[in-house]
Amino acid sequence: MKRRNLLKYIAGISIGSLVPVDSMATGYRRKSEKNIKKIECDVLIVGGGTAGVIAALQAARAGCSTVLVENSGQLGGTITTGGVAFPGLFHAWGRQIIGGIGWELVSETVKLGDGVFPDFTVPTGKKHSNHQVRINPYLYSLLAEEKCIQAGVQIRYYETPVKAQYTDDNWLVEVIGKGTHLRIKSNQLIDCTGNACLTALSGFNVVREKEIQPGSLMFEIGGYDLSKLNTKLIREKYSEAISKKELSRVDFRNNIIGLLQTRGDNIQHVLDADSTTSETHTITNIKGRGSLLETFRFLRTLPGCENTVIESMQTEVAVRETYRIDGEYRITHEDYIQGKFFNDSLSYSFYPIDIHDERGVVPRHLNNGVVPTVPLRALIPKGSNNFLVAGRCVSSDREANSALRVQASCMGMGQAAAAAAVIAHRRKTTPLNAPIDEVKDLISGSGGIVPTRN
Image (cartoon, rainbow, N blue to C red; front, side, top):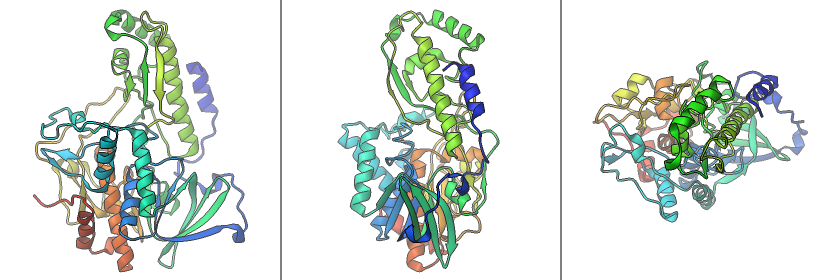
């Protein structure tokens, strides 16, 4: 599809409201009340991605009946469906700062796949990627599913919530899927969608900037010998294609040689990548695949690249930023870069400020010894009861969120949110009022690392 045809196609899609979820837009004919299946659980988690899997395992292992709703057909989210199979960062300044269930799952994936751990004793300096753990995403998906089943988690694939109501100290959440219409009664609810979709559906405020970070379609190319390529000629032809508007300089960060060197991986940029609604998600994926196809055709016209092949490609664009909750506390950029400790800090985060734009990204690293923390209040939508979030939609400003969104941090938040939900359920209260020491004890008892004041 030519670029101008692609843009015309995208413009022709009628995009509705940017509110994350509109239950009236599903096109689903509701069944009569008697035909709606009803189930109950202690903890309901929506979203089986990076944070959701860990939350489900923590809740179930702590003895709560747990249901996990996921609208795709596998667990793992960004790691598996998105293909960003190098989660980090679990270590900071020579010590491990995120452990627990997330680290258990990552470690087992590395060992079963004969992988290799980075040397965590060597400081990363300005090269934080040195401590990212390369894992086999297929094994990760299999192990995540196995562990959830062993823990007693009821996994429900291909289902999406369309209604959520809090009544009589419980949540009633309606979900629809392939031939299913279900009402789930749950005492505690955790939004792990990454987009704060369930939060918005439940009537709580969500926020986002007008401009959001680009996403990346993960893929791998081959079929050429980089050492034999005329890089000067390739740059000239690339600039010519851009001037003719046959290619866009932002699609691969204006770095065609970088694309050939990396053979794909995480170099692509899909501007305005938004997975909030089915419409915006459709556009995001079409844009990502379209730019790859255009560039692939271009590469095959280059001397030495005639036999270039696409060896692998993920099914979806990995998205960096959408909506965040308006929480009981908002983690600020200053909180993050200063490593602020809160009395209700439940997990650590460690990553540079990492805002991508059309020019690329220049990470802003933390000062020596700084390790940020995540308080429980940032996982609770303002004014809510029996409701938490975990993962990318944590209450935070944009700069702090650019670092908090990474996978290890989301795993830590997933375990923390679920621990708070478990204690709140046991105490018959809302997570904001759950005894914080009991929450911390549950996390520690499950192998997690609870922040301490320096």
